[in-house]
Image 1 (spheres, rainbow, N blue to C red):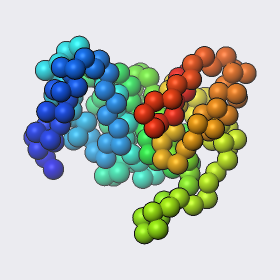
Image 2 (spheres, one colour; image 1 turned 135 degrees about the vertical axis):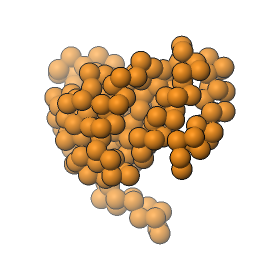
Image 3 (tube, rainbow, N blue to C red; image 1 turned 180 degrees about the horizontal axis):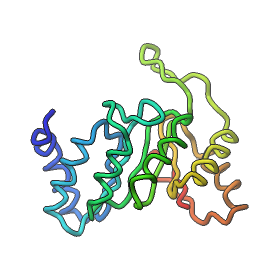
Image 4 (tube, one colour; image 1 turned 45 degrees about the horizontal axis):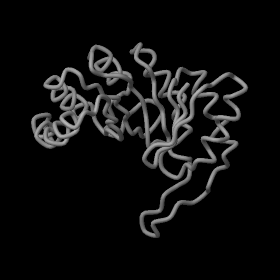
Length: 188
């Protein structure tokens, strides 16, 4: 899709949310910078509305369409209505490197909410290899140290993963825990 087609696709949804009083939008699982640019273009019509942008990534450095996440972060860093930049719905083993790539090009807060590391089988529609909450919380500490300020969980994570992260984090004076709309969050 072109950027103009993406604007047309998102325009009405964003307008409805803005007119309903939303002040921060979660624009997530973005596969390409063109989509983020289209959303930013729409946001300019609603100057009191901000958004965070999280990309899905295919490896340590690239979002789903193959563009470097550092290039996405560099462009988004200059946009005033961008509240945070990050990664979601991505395997945990790629997150630390991706955080470092984002922080190398942006001073905006970094948000990450990877999947659990389990593998989804689209034929059986099941997840395999359920990782432990302890592993997720240990990874969360690494992600925080790398620069993530907001940490949550996406596909196949559970409240236990965030609870374990909070226990680990409470030793480091992490303050807030929140469960929202199927995703699990820890604000650092």
